[in-house]
Length: 258
Ligand code: CAA
Image 1 (cartoon, rainbow, N blue to C red):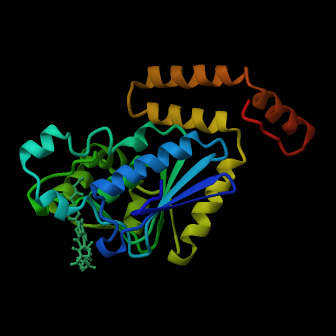
Image 2 (cartoon, rainbow, N blue to C red; image 1 turned 180 degrees about the vertical axis):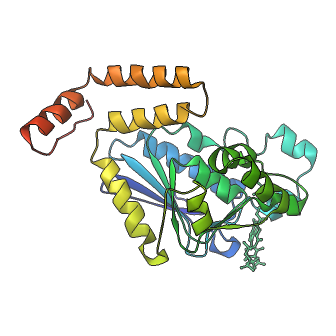
Image 3 (cartoon, rainbow, N blue to C red; image 1 turned 60 degrees about the vertical axis):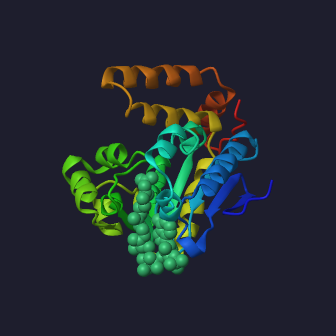
């Protein structure tokens, strides 16, 4: 079914999902979150897709959850519908690698969406923030938990309590983004990173994602054991045999995801 709030293109094994509500700075309303969830599940199911890139416009990745839509909801509405519950977090269940390419504002739910991706490449114009406190609420899509894990308690607490924005340079310094690139080169850099990922075995990239994410959920001992078992499991793959033979033969590996 066609999308109204996002644009999806699949090319060269990369699904590019562009948030597209320019009049509202890509604010995340229920329609956009539903369409994004659907596009992500389609990309997960599409055998051609080996990496996903999510981006917005030059001015805004996303300026947060849609305030107009939220302003009409009561506690009962929010609680009974489990607003921003599992359906809005569909991205968490995607096992293929996802890159956020962020330009301009990534605020509130926009910052939270970027943090739910596997890594963030930011343009030098990017601004991150959790300004929900200015609206008499707090983050609702995981911001208090994820930002704290990315940048530490002090900076996360300050951002959430004051609502101040963090620029791209500070975001890189604090470990929120993997790197900052000039605004004009953002998509080129993000697609080139995605392309590199598509050249690997999907078995390896999915295992990497699972293992790194595990580090958020468990102890070091359990996490390293999980990593080691995945490592052992990949010894059963044809891609492990191919990757290691290719190295020894001094040629490029031809992975087949088997
Ligand atoms: N929801 C709905 N509409 C939004 C929006 C949002 N989060 N952010 C911007 N818009 C709309 C504006 O209302 C405006 O629409 P109109 O032209 O119809 O008036 C349009 O987008 C352009 O915005 P501005 O005129 O405000 O643009 P600006 O350049 O002056 O300011 C901005 C940009 C600083 C990002 C400002 O728009 C802003 O502060 N936005 C709200 C940011 C925010 O509070 N985000 C958190 C939302 S709550 C949340 O996300 C909860 C959660 O954790 C899940």
